[in-house]
Length: 368
Image (cartoon, rainbow, N blue to C red; front, side):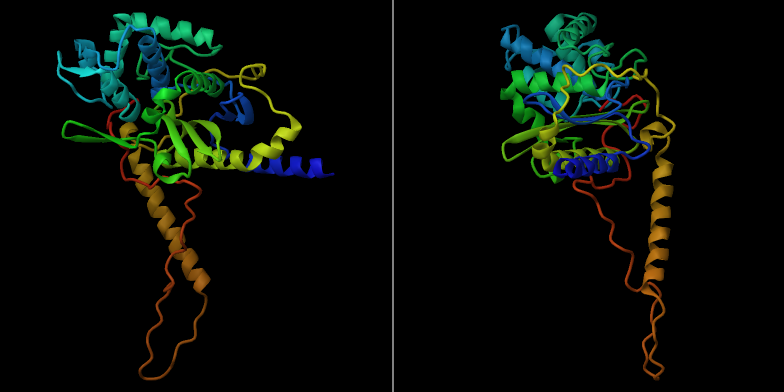
């Protein structure tokens, strides 16, 4: 009876995590690959700047093999300079160290720096992409294809929530000495202060990485990790329509995982590396029509949605206030309708603060 009751709670909690418009998600323990929650984990999706997790892994590998060091200077080529935002914007011929390049790649999600690193590791972006796909195959990322080093729009560049989990597990397991790069909230580059796109690092207890991604066709993606009481969990969230919803969904998944991990293990859990590919796994789709972003020409939806919420709050507050008796004396103060104000909105476990415009890029080609 106890087991049945617990299972019912698990099922109810999992369903509550799944809004009708949600994209693929996966919550797992990177220490052993066990899955706490999965939804459409084998559906293909555009990774956007989550691509840069693979780019960073291959740079880490090159450093370990002695091909590069953190102090190695790398230059900005014509191809790197031509990449659209998000970017640092170095002129052709300018240099930076590999260490700075990695920090900017991860925190700023700089597309130009991704190409600089790719060329430094493999000589050209084309050769680097071949290396990316070879490595993906070795990691068992069977439904992933890379076409560039930064995640900018390319029809053939696809992955899945499960494949991203395998990639993240490899990065965290094999290169723990770079953990500080994934958890950095901001950095200085000369006189510029660069800030992370990962809102959870500021407002979710235990958050410690790792990467966000966004293009119009993919929506807002994130691979988010957090550690509490020595246990680390990772949530993969793909295809949210706003950055705020991306953060909220990732935080909800992580919160569920920290509460459920102990007793969920009583029923056995699938593993990211051994669970069979879903028979109903689908190919990639675009959700450009649903995304709310100035970069995609749909930012007006955000303004209209905000105005609608304000009107609904005002109506609700007025209804909740109800009829109020008014002092009929000559000095009676007028009772204002809705004087109690709009009800405070529950921001969830780690909702990101709403912004009028997305960070960084203002073009539809953004990968961040």
